[in-house]
Image (tube, rainbow, N blue to C red; front, side, top):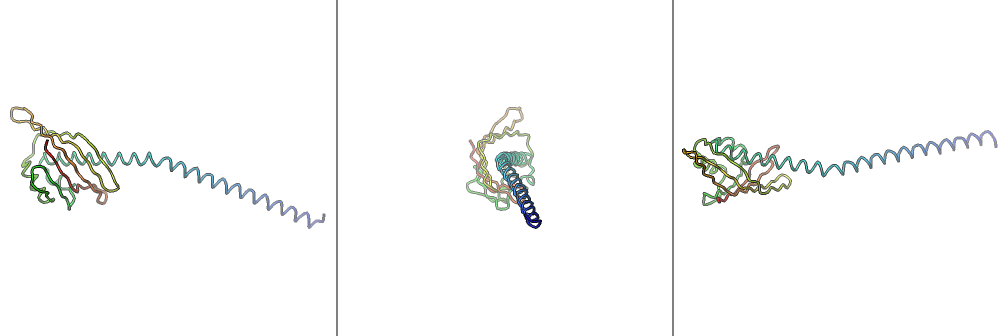
Length: 177
């Protein structure tokens, strides 16, 4: 073998080694990418469940705030979480009412702050994108002058929608038990 043949053979071996190293490196990068993707895929359900639970608790807190504000006669606090296109049907009125009529209804229902206590008996909640539906029984205990309590219970259904960063009450219906 001549000198040029040895050099050519040496360069071929060097090229083959370089290609093998690059192939191994490329395979290692692909494997890392696949493993990372799989780990992310398996962590999504837990993140989704946690997010769903957080949103549900946010809705329940808004439900509590809504009625707490009503019975404290904080109408501005109530209306702040009500959507501009609100439509509701309280059991005490003969037809559905909008946001303005709802404000008047609240002022008639609770003309001044009360010492009533509230509790919400959660029945169900469903989330679908930027919409939430909550159903529950609201128990309102208003003691009289003698200290005897009168408990009023109502079944409530509320529909919430996400408007920007905030949930707003779009509609609702109640039935006094």
